[in-house]
Image (cartoon, rainbow, N blue to C red; front, top):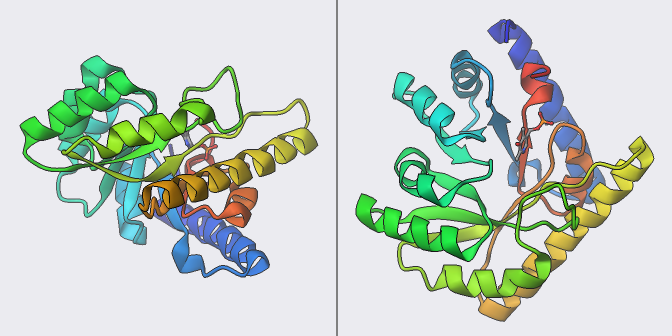
Length: 235
Ligand SMILES: *Cc1c(COP(=O)(O)O)cnc(C)c1O
């Protein structure tokens, strides 16, 4: 990443304008959509820029990389969220180094994170990652498995389930990609509504939408878009 803070701020303004315009079309308040800056593969300046701009959180997809950056910049007022696949044997490092884990998609990982949070002596916030687009190339629980996974998560005393996360599949053409995104995000929203009424938990967070598909995500009710490329350039 070679951009200056001023360039970054202009890009962040543009992303916020996209969010605001999608909110206006959907009749939503832009304050209900958080911009999470995805800093993976970028140097620590990326996180410093995000904090200086006033963003509250950054997303990393690898435990070691996120933990190392956080250690180098301990004073930044940022929440660090893990958005990438997590192996159970790294659960302890993830629970110690991140404020929230968005990629929880199986029972074994739930158990490992619950134990790790108990050892940390603090509750750990999580999202359940659901493969709402049924993409064989993506991690995430099968939507049919989500009710059982949620019940197990709610029974973990040291975990706090904030909501759901998904990544939409890529299509062969831009039109197909958009169509898949619309259907995936709508499916996650409907799944959340069903699970929330079944468990009487709000499950307020819907983490969905990235650089290429934040508009359909906001239209479907996203509360957090995870954006890397539009803020920092290509990786
Ligand atoms: C990399 C990544 C993003 C950001 O993607 P961009 O297209 O660069 O905005 C969002 N979510 C997850 C899970 C990612 O791994």
